[in-house]
Length: 121
Image (cartoon, rainbow, N blue to C red; front, side, top):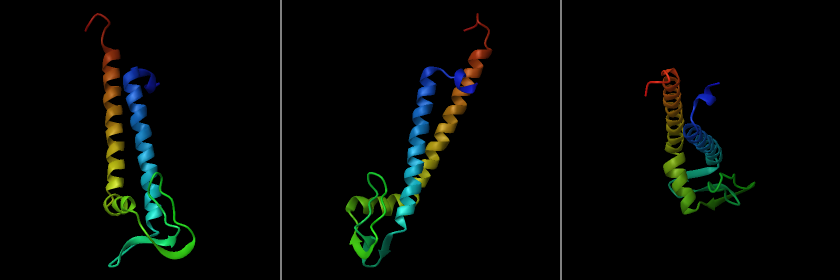
């Protein structure tokens, strides 16, 4: 099995990369789902419903009452610079690419190490 070929350090780093990539991907999907409740017009940014939603610590949809509510500065930053500009999706994609490249590098190193004769360093 390919995971048995990895040394402990590589396996641990790969597990951590995988967990962080998964969490970031799930956060990005949830944040884009919650972002549909935000409004952005010449009057400013906010939520279309009350009580207001939030992007931290995990994206939460606003309540069911139809009323405009203000967005906090942190939520505004996340919405404007990470969600609306798709930077969050780009970061998740880049982290998955890094995880895949690390896996390829670790497996290549493990295969090369296994193929060497025992007397050769």
